[in-house]
Image (cartoon, rainbow, N blue to C red):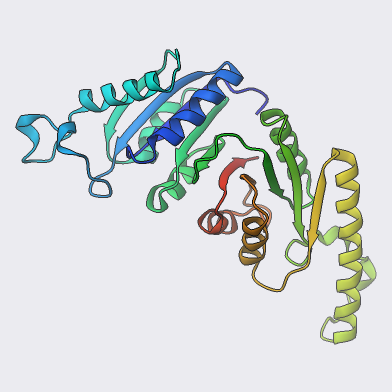
Length: 282
Protein backbone atom coordinates (compact mmCIF):
# COMPACT_ATOMS: atom_id res chain seq x y z
CA UNK A 1 0.00 0.00 0.00
CA UNK A 2 1.65 3.23 -1.19
CA UNK A 3 -1.11 5.61 -0.13
CA UNK A 4 -4.18 5.63 2.08
CA UNK A 5 -7.21 7.07 0.34
CA UNK A 6 -9.84 6.03 2.86
CA UNK A 7 -9.94 5.12 6.54
CA UNK A 8 -12.78 3.02 7.90
CA UNK A 9 -13.33 3.18 11.67
CA UNK A 10 -15.23 0.08 12.77
CA UNK A 11 -17.18 0.42 16.03
CA UNK A 12 -19.09 -2.27 17.90
CA UNK A 13 -19.73 -0.53 21.22
CA UNK A 14 -19.46 2.88 22.82
CA UNK A 15 -17.06 1.85 25.59
CA UNK A 16 -14.13 1.69 23.15
CA UNK A 17 -15.49 4.08 20.54
CA UNK A 18 -13.50 7.18 21.53
CA UNK A 19 -10.15 5.37 21.33
CA UNK A 20 -10.94 4.22 17.80
CA UNK A 21 -12.34 7.59 16.72
CA UNK A 22 -9.32 9.51 18.02
CA UNK A 23 -6.91 7.28 16.06
CA UNK A 24 -9.07 7.41 12.94
CA UNK A 25 -9.46 11.18 12.99
CA UNK A 26 -5.76 11.77 13.55
CA UNK A 27 -4.66 9.36 10.82
CA UNK A 28 -7.27 10.74 8.43
CA UNK A 29 -5.87 14.21 8.95
CA UNK A 30 -2.24 13.09 8.57
CA UNK A 31 -2.89 11.07 5.44
CA UNK A 32 -5.46 13.47 3.98
CA UNK A 33 -7.75 10.48 3.60
CA UNK A 34 -11.54 10.26 3.62
CA UNK A 35 -13.08 8.81 6.77
CA UNK A 36 -16.07 6.52 7.08
CA UNK A 37 -17.39 5.32 10.44
CA UNK A 38 -19.08 1.93 10.46
CA UNK A 39 -21.04 1.09 13.61
CA UNK A 40 -22.31 -2.49 13.84
CA UNK A 41 -24.32 -3.55 16.85
CA UNK A 42 -23.71 -7.25 17.40
CA UNK A 43 -26.50 -8.99 19.24
CA UNK A 44 -26.22 -10.51 21.79
CA UNK A 45 -22.51 -9.64 22.29
CA UNK A 46 -23.09 -6.01 23.24
CA UNK A 47 -25.92 -4.35 25.13
CA UNK A 48 -27.16 -0.90 24.18
CA UNK A 49 -28.63 1.55 26.72
CA UNK A 50 -32.36 2.04 26.31
CA UNK A 51 -31.89 5.58 25.04
CA UNK A 52 -30.48 4.08 21.84
CA UNK A 53 -33.79 2.30 21.27
CA UNK A 54 -36.97 3.95 20.06
CA UNK A 55 -39.93 3.86 22.46
CA UNK A 56 -41.84 1.40 20.34
CA UNK A 57 -38.86 -0.91 19.91
CA UNK A 58 -37.58 -1.27 23.48
CA UNK A 59 -39.58 -4.43 24.06
CA UNK A 60 -38.30 -6.24 20.97
CA UNK A 61 -34.72 -4.88 21.28
CA UNK A 62 -34.59 -3.07 17.94
CA UNK A 63 -31.97 -0.33 17.88
CA UNK A 64 -32.59 3.26 16.91
CA UNK A 65 -29.99 3.84 14.20
CA UNK A 66 -30.63 7.58 14.06
CA UNK A 67 -29.82 7.96 17.76
CA UNK A 68 -26.64 5.93 17.38
CA UNK A 69 -25.57 7.99 14.39
CA UNK A 70 -26.24 11.22 16.30
CA UNK A 71 -24.19 9.97 19.26
CA UNK A 72 -21.23 9.20 17.02
CA UNK A 73 -21.44 12.58 15.29
CA UNK A 74 -21.53 14.30 18.70
CA UNK A 75 -18.44 12.39 19.82
CA UNK A 76 -16.57 13.36 16.66
CA UNK A 77 -17.52 16.99 17.28
CA UNK A 78 -16.28 16.82 20.91
CA UNK A 79 -12.94 15.55 19.68
CA UNK A 80 -12.55 19.00 18.12
CA UNK A 81 -12.54 17.70 14.61
CA UNK A 82 -14.05 19.40 11.60
CA UNK A 83 -13.94 16.09 9.73
CA UNK A 84 -16.75 15.66 7.25
CA UNK A 85 -17.13 11.92 7.72
CA UNK A 86 -19.87 9.48 6.77
CA UNK A 87 -21.51 7.44 9.54
CA UNK A 88 -23.19 4.12 8.78
CA UNK A 89 -25.10 2.00 11.31
CA UNK A 90 -26.02 -1.68 10.95
CA UNK A 91 -27.05 -4.64 13.06
CA UNK A 92 -24.92 -7.82 13.18
CA UNK A 93 -22.26 -9.40 10.94
CA UNK A 94 -19.40 -6.89 11.20
CA UNK A 95 -17.06 -8.70 8.74
CA UNK A 96 -19.72 -8.87 6.04
CA UNK A 97 -20.72 -5.22 6.54
CA UNK A 98 -17.10 -4.17 6.21
CA UNK A 99 -16.52 -6.33 3.15
CA UNK A 100 -19.57 -4.85 1.44
CA UNK A 101 -18.49 -1.32 2.30
CA UNK A 102 -14.95 -1.72 0.96
CA UNK A 103 -15.33 -4.12 -1.97
CA UNK A 104 -15.27 -1.38 -4.63
CA UNK A 105 -12.38 0.57 -3.13
CA UNK A 106 -8.61 0.33 -2.90
CA UNK A 107 -5.94 1.72 -0.54
CA UNK A 108 -8.13 1.46 2.55
CA UNK A 109 -6.94 1.40 6.16
CA UNK A 110 -9.18 -0.08 8.86
CA UNK A 111 -9.20 0.82 12.56
CA UNK A 112 -11.15 -1.14 15.16
CA UNK A 113 -11.13 -2.04 18.85
CA UNK A 114 -10.17 -5.56 19.88
CA UNK A 115 -13.09 -7.92 20.44
CA UNK A 116 -12.03 -11.55 20.58
CA UNK A 117 -15.14 -12.92 18.88
CA UNK A 118 -15.20 -10.34 16.09
CA UNK A 119 -11.69 -9.11 15.31
CA UNK A 120 -10.21 -12.35 13.96
CA UNK A 121 -13.12 -12.84 11.54
CA UNK A 122 -12.86 -9.21 10.46
CA UNK A 123 -9.15 -9.58 9.68
CA UNK A 124 -9.72 -12.83 7.81
CA UNK A 125 -12.32 -11.18 5.59
CA UNK A 126 -10.38 -7.99 4.94
CA UNK A 127 -7.57 -7.64 2.43
CA UNK A 128 -6.59 -4.25 3.89
CA UNK A 129 -4.36 -3.29 6.84
CA UNK A 130 -6.22 -3.46 10.16
CA UNK A 131 -5.14 -1.46 13.22
CA UNK A 132 -6.51 -3.15 16.36
CA UNK A 133 -6.83 -0.82 19.35
CA UNK A 134 -6.22 -2.32 22.79
CA UNK A 135 -5.07 0.73 24.75
CA UNK A 136 -5.54 4.45 25.15
CA UNK A 137 -2.12 5.38 23.75
CA UNK A 138 -2.38 8.74 22.01
CA UNK A 139 0.79 8.53 19.93
CA UNK A 140 2.90 5.56 18.90
CA UNK A 141 6.44 6.32 20.04
CA UNK A 142 7.87 2.77 20.24
CA UNK A 143 6.96 0.28 17.51
CA UNK A 144 8.17 -3.32 17.17
CA UNK A 145 8.16 -5.37 13.96
CA UNK A 146 8.57 -9.16 14.32
CA UNK A 147 10.10 -10.28 11.02
CA UNK A 148 11.03 -13.49 9.17
CA UNK A 149 14.00 -12.33 7.04
CA UNK A 150 12.10 -12.79 3.76
CA UNK A 151 11.30 -10.13 1.16
CA UNK A 152 7.92 -9.87 2.82
CA UNK A 153 9.59 -8.24 5.81
CA UNK A 154 11.08 -5.49 3.60
CA UNK A 155 7.57 -4.55 2.48
CA UNK A 156 6.39 -4.45 6.08
CA UNK A 157 9.31 -2.27 7.17
CA UNK A 158 8.74 0.17 4.30
CA UNK A 159 5.05 0.31 5.18
CA UNK A 160 5.84 1.11 8.83
CA UNK A 161 8.30 3.83 7.86
CA UNK A 162 5.77 5.54 5.60
CA UNK A 163 2.94 5.34 8.10
CA UNK A 164 4.88 6.23 11.27
CA UNK A 165 7.94 8.21 10.09
CA UNK A 166 8.72 9.78 13.46
CA UNK A 167 8.27 6.76 15.75
CA UNK A 168 11.14 4.66 17.07
CA UNK A 169 10.87 1.35 15.16
CA UNK A 170 12.66 -1.82 16.25
CA UNK A 171 12.99 -5.19 14.53
CA UNK A 172 12.48 -8.51 16.35
CA UNK A 173 13.56 -11.98 15.23
CA UNK A 174 13.53 -15.38 16.94
CA UNK A 175 15.95 -17.62 15.06
CA UNK A 176 14.61 -21.00 16.23
CA UNK A 177 11.20 -20.77 14.62
CA UNK A 178 11.74 -19.31 11.20
CA UNK A 179 14.20 -21.25 9.08
CA UNK A 180 15.07 -20.15 5.58
CA UNK A 181 15.95 -23.52 4.08
CA UNK A 182 17.98 -21.83 1.35
CA UNK A 183 20.58 -21.12 4.03
CA UNK A 184 21.17 -24.86 4.62
CA UNK A 185 24.27 -26.18 2.89
CA UNK A 186 23.30 -28.67 0.16
CA UNK A 187 25.71 -31.21 1.71
CA UNK A 188 23.29 -31.59 4.62
CA UNK A 189 20.27 -32.44 2.52
CA UNK A 190 21.15 -36.13 2.26
CA UNK A 191 22.41 -36.41 5.83
CA UNK A 192 20.44 -37.94 8.66
CA UNK A 193 19.70 -35.45 11.43
CA UNK A 194 19.13 -38.13 14.06
CA UNK A 195 22.68 -37.67 15.29
CA UNK A 196 22.65 -34.98 18.06
CA UNK A 197 26.09 -33.79 17.03
CA UNK A 198 24.88 -33.19 13.48
CA UNK A 199 21.72 -31.50 14.80
CA UNK A 200 23.79 -29.17 16.92
CA UNK A 201 26.14 -28.37 14.06
CA UNK A 202 23.27 -27.61 11.65
CA UNK A 203 21.52 -25.52 14.29
CA UNK A 204 24.63 -23.48 15.01
CA UNK A 205 25.26 -22.85 11.32
CA UNK A 206 21.64 -21.83 10.79
CA UNK A 207 21.78 -19.57 13.81
CA UNK A 208 24.98 -17.93 12.60
CA UNK A 209 23.62 -17.49 9.07
CA UNK A 210 20.37 -15.98 10.29
CA UNK A 211 22.19 -13.70 12.72
CA UNK A 212 24.32 -12.38 9.86
CA UNK A 213 21.24 -11.89 7.67
CA UNK A 214 19.51 -10.05 10.51
CA UNK A 215 22.50 -7.77 11.06
CA UNK A 216 22.60 -7.01 7.34
CA UNK A 217 18.89 -6.18 7.36
CA UNK A 218 19.37 -3.80 10.30
CA UNK A 219 22.16 -2.04 8.46
CA UNK A 220 20.17 -1.86 5.23
CA UNK A 221 17.02 -0.46 6.86
CA UNK A 222 18.74 1.74 9.42
CA UNK A 223 16.74 0.15 12.23
CA UNK A 224 17.92 -1.40 15.48
CA UNK A 225 16.64 -4.83 16.48
CA UNK A 226 16.74 -7.80 18.82
CA UNK A 227 17.79 -11.34 17.87
CA UNK A 228 16.16 -13.36 20.63
CA UNK A 229 16.95 -16.89 21.81
CA UNK A 230 14.09 -18.04 24.04
CA UNK A 231 12.83 -21.47 25.02
CA UNK A 232 9.05 -21.32 24.82
CA UNK A 233 6.59 -21.40 21.92
CA UNK A 234 6.94 -18.72 19.23
CA UNK A 235 3.82 -16.95 20.48
CA UNK A 236 4.99 -17.03 24.10
CA UNK A 237 8.52 -15.93 23.22
CA UNK A 238 7.50 -12.97 21.11
CA UNK A 239 4.57 -11.82 23.23
CA UNK A 240 6.58 -12.01 26.45
CA UNK A 241 9.45 -10.02 24.97
CA UNK A 242 7.15 -7.40 23.46
CA UNK A 243 4.95 -7.00 26.54
CA UNK A 244 7.83 -6.51 28.99
CA UNK A 245 9.61 -4.10 26.63
CA UNK A 246 6.77 -1.56 26.82
CA UNK A 247 6.15 -1.03 23.13
CA UNK A 248 3.11 0.98 22.02
CA UNK A 249 2.40 -0.85 18.76
CA UNK A 250 3.25 -4.21 17.20
CA UNK A 251 3.17 -4.51 13.40
CA UNK A 252 2.56 -8.01 12.03
CA UNK A 253 2.83 -8.72 8.32
CA UNK A 254 0.22 -11.38 7.67
CA UNK A 255 1.20 -14.07 5.16
CA UNK A 256 0.08 -17.70 4.99
CA UNK A 257 3.20 -18.78 3.10
CA UNK A 258 5.61 -18.22 5.99
CA UNK A 259 5.40 -19.78 9.44
CA UNK A 260 6.04 -16.78 11.63
CA UNK A 261 3.56 -14.62 9.82
CA UNK A 262 0.91 -17.26 9.23
CA UNK A 263 -2.66 -16.61 10.26
CA UNK A 264 -2.51 -19.00 13.23
CA UNK A 265 0.58 -17.39 14.75
CA UNK A 266 -0.63 -13.86 14.00
CA UNK A 267 -4.00 -14.46 15.62
CA UNK A 268 -2.40 -16.09 18.65
CA UNK A 269 -0.12 -13.06 19.04
CA UNK A 270 -3.10 -10.75 18.64
CA UNK A 271 -4.69 -12.33 21.71
CA UNK A 272 -1.52 -12.38 23.81
CA UNK A 273 -0.07 -8.94 23.12
CA UNK A 274 -0.84 -6.02 25.40
CA UNK A 275 0.10 -3.47 22.71
CA UNK A 276 -2.08 -2.18 19.91
CA UNK A 277 -1.57 -4.41 16.85
CA UNK A 278 -1.41 -3.51 13.17
CA UNK A 279 -1.87 -6.49 10.85
CA UNK A 280 -1.13 -6.00 7.18
CA UNK A 281 -1.34 -8.58 4.40
CA UNK A 282 1.38 -8.63 1.76
